[in-house]
Every structure is written in C-alpha cells, then in structure tokens.
Image 1 (spheres, rainbow, N blue to C red):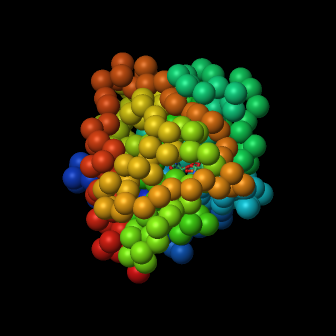
Image 2 (image 1 turned 45 degrees about the vertical axis):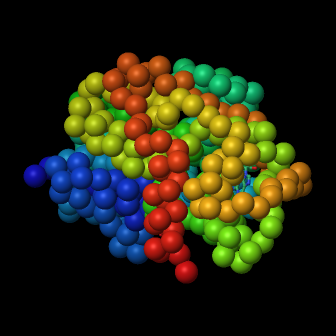
Length: 307
Ligand SMILES: NC(=O)C1=CN([C@@H]2O[C@H](COP(=O)(O)OP(=O)(O)OC[C@H]3O[C@@H](n4cnc5c(N)ncnc54)[C@H](OP(=O)(O)O)[C@@H]3O)[C@@H](O)[C@H]2O)C=CC1
Ligand SMILES: C[C@H]1O[C@H](OP(=O)(O)OP(=O)(O)OC[C@H]2O[C@@H](n3cnc4c(=O)[nH]c(N)nc43)[C@H](O)[C@@H]2O)[C@@H](O)[C@@H](O)C1=O
C-alpha cells in the first residue's frame, strides 16, 4: 500500500482527512509535532529518508482566527515560513512524487471581494490582519511552483481552501475562527441563560465556509489523480453569507433564542473574500455538506469533546 505523509495530521484538517473513509487506500504516516517538529530541517530530512513516503499532504501550520493573527503576526509569519520552506525543500531533495500543499483564501489581495480567481494572487496588497500568515502561505505556493518547474517529474499541487470548520476545530475564543467561536458563544449563552451574544463588527462582512470533511474528500480525489488538478486550485462552495447570518443559523441549530449585539471595536478584516470555483467546477467536484448539516455535526462533536 502506498505511504501518505500527512503534516499537521493532528490538526483539524489532518484529523478530518484521517477520519475520511477514502483514507483506507493509503498507509498513513502522521507524526505529531512532539515526534517531528517541522521547524527542525535536519530532523525532517532524516525522517523522510527513513520513511520514504509516496505522497505528502501538507496541512501543518500555525493557524488561528483574526484575533490570533493580530496578536502574534511575527509568529504566524516566521513559523509558517519555516515550516513551508523546510517541508518543501526536504520533499524536493527526497523527490517525493506527489505533494498536495494547502494554502488559504487569505493569500488574495485585500481589495478584491468576490470571484477571487487563482491568477489574481500576488496582484495587490494583502489584508493587514493576516498579512504575515498570508506571506508565508504565498511563499510555500511559489516554492511548489518553482520545484515543479525545476523537476518535471513532480506532481505537486496547491489547493486554496476558503474558511473551514468542523470536528476537531479550536473553540477557544482567543484562537478560533468565526464558526467555532459562534458555536462556543451560543452554547455558553444557552447553558448559562444569557439573553445576548456579542458579534464582532457590524455583522455585514461576508465569509465563505466549508466543512473540513469536504476538504478531506477533495484532497483524497486530488491524491488519486494529481495530473487532473490545476497547479493552483481554489476549493470551496462558491457561496458566502453575512456574519449575522452565520450567527442566526447556528442559533437555530443550537436552540438558543436570545438577542445579538454588535461590538464595533472588534477586528473585522476583509469585508468579503469569495473564491471563484471555476477551476474546481471544471475539475468536476463540489462540496456536498450543507451549512446547517455541517454546523449540527460540528456542534454534536463539540458537545461530546469540549469540557
Ligand atoms: N482552518 C481554516 O479555516 C483554514 C485552514 N487552512 C489551511 O489548512 C491547513 C490546516 O489547518 P487546520 O487544520 O485548520 O489547523 P490546525 O491548527 O487545526 O492544525 C495545524 C497542525 O499543524 C501542526 N503544527 C504546527 N506547527 C508545527 C510544527 N512546527 N511541526 C509539526 N507540526 C506543526 C499543529 O500541531 P499542534 O497541534 O502541536 O500545534 C496542528 O496539528 C493549514 O495549512 C491552514 O493554513 C486554509 C484555509 C482555512
Ligand atoms: C481562513 C482565514 O481566517 C482568518 O481570517 P478571517 O476570515 O478574518 O477570520 P475569522 O474566522 O476569525 O473571522 C471572520 C469574520 O468573523 C467575524 N467575527 C464575528 N464574531 C467573531 C468571533 O466571535 N470570533 C471570530 N474569530 N470572528 C468573529 C470577524 O470580525 C471577521 O470579520 C485568517 O486570519 C486566517 O486564519 C485564514 O486563513
């Protein structure tokens, strides 16, 4: 059976990938950070020489919501740049034939709002709230591209997912992205009997969210036939919603009937970042998990696993 090295295999995307039934086609190698620190280039080179994977999914990184990015921009830039550089250089040296690199919709210029198309990356200034993280993600994408130009035998691709949520997500308010933050806040309001929940910003900014199980399916499809995947491809539902709508939908799923208040002092970031899914559609794939269904499944996981 072919060996698949998943970096970040203990994070949200990695755990959803490992939980997908399609992963059974692979022998999975998913060392935790305590076993293999990707900031340690020598350790990574040795590990690859010992384990000789046939394919790599690069899903490791320092990842967090807007507040976490604003709190530690240097860490988001430095650690993500180190991880990306080390991983891609080591895989190039080891001539790993297949690699799926995960980028993020934050790599798009801040002044573009919808129909974000892959060729628009690096055409304008970045959103300041996550500039460090985005620079590191862009560097990794460019390294993947350069490696493929230098070695035509490599089938390396970059997928650019929209915002993600799902089981195994981080729900801590200081770290979390929007959807896990909403689930945590509304659940606490329900069990503690609060009448209001606070929304950051005025609620009119928009985001595109996809269930991490759908991304897992796309990754497995890409691994099964990398030659059919464009060098860089957005991954998402191609539909966005206002921040207020996400709160309303989650309140319905969780069964809380209080009021929302807006805190205009909190960071908002991009007003909108809706990906073009033209390449994904051409590839013949679309995510299947509906938003309510995905939030309900994530809430069920939260109830089972959160203290
Ligand atoms: N979540 C989202 O909304 C989105 C995520 N992405 C991308 O998807 C990928 C996965 O994100 P996600 O699963 O959400 O993030 P998580 O934070 O859940 O997982 C990241 C994983 O990377 C590991 N990691 C971090 N630093 C190192 C290191 N130095 N050595 C080894 N492992 C390390 C973490 O380990 P530890 O647990 O020990 O910290 C963690 O297991 C990332 O590339 C991210 O940029 C793209 C778009 C949206
Ligand atoms: C995927 C992408 O995600 C990050 O960017 P982001 O989309 O701005 O991140 P976010 O999910 O934290 O916020 C989305 C929106 O939601 C609003 N919002 C309301 N109320 C809460 C709230 O309670 N928590 C949070 N976090 N946001 C809230 C918030 O004001 C913002 O307008 C990147 O840093 C980077 O990690 C990256 O790649």
